Length: 82
Image 1 (tube, rainbow, N blue to C red):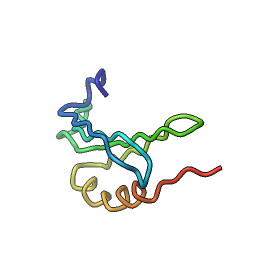
Image 2 (tube, helix red, strand yellow):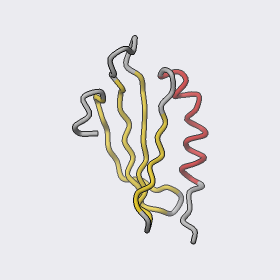
Image 3 (cartoon, rainbow, N blue to C red):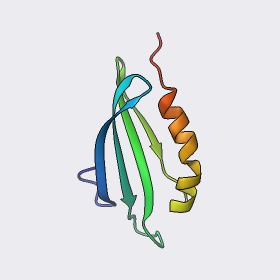
Image 4 (cartoon, rainbow, N blue to C red):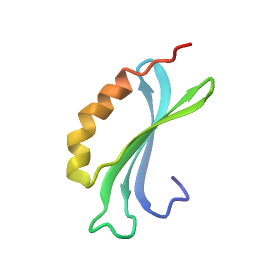
């Protein structure tokens, strides 16, 4: 994220994904071709085989907000198996 010139106003925070330690970022996607910046977020969880990334975008910020409950459900129901 730090080097992504299409992302601005990134806010990082430590969080939990169910009982797993995680890092989450919210940011504005300012990619060329967009009529306006749109909200996005991503969650990273470390797993034995590597990092798991859960990203929520959307066509615009309004759609992002409508999909947020599904993202939150995925976040609180994550678990490592096997």
